[in-house]
Length: 201
Image 1 (tube, helix red, strand yellow):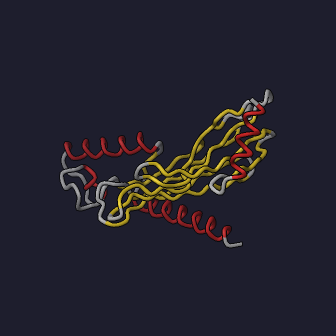
Image 2 (cartoon, one colour):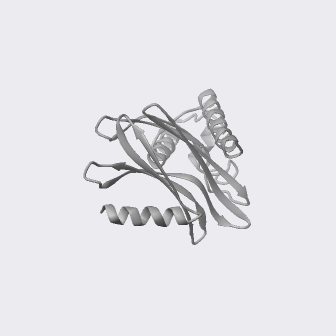
Image 3 (tube, helix red, strand yellow):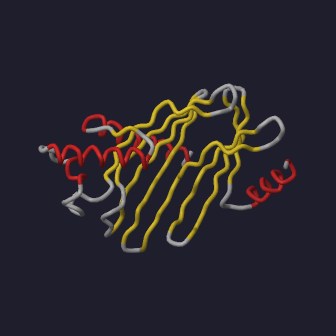
């Protein structure tokens, strides 16, 4: 297993598209592998976190999108991400956007926070999100409309609850509204700005 890992590492180091980093969190060793991909109409970069077990096995803990563009020249779904490590805590920031003539792709932001445990496992301590799954004008029959106007009837309220539950399930977090949503978007944008500023230093 160790030999395979060394070969894999060498391949990454020789490739301009790959990057390997070793970190220690809560007295546990981890490898962070950054990989580029170009598949069908999707192109981007993903980071994968591996726990380095004492028997030299690498145990995958999670994957996170640093950048993704999916779609055609006329319209794309875009996701930008950043991560920051503070002590034993890893925070992942995601921003979802649209470019061009696309209507049924997400717009919004998400913050996920994990704490590294003594045994090398990750415990999710926070996950907040605000996601519009399509443009405001795209589907006027969808319950997404109640993000911008109040649901009045019981049927409308139930449909909106269904929308929120669906988004929370798909994006794995707790939906936030109004001021909290604005603060979330602002926090994610600042994290992405910090990521960009580090590139230029």
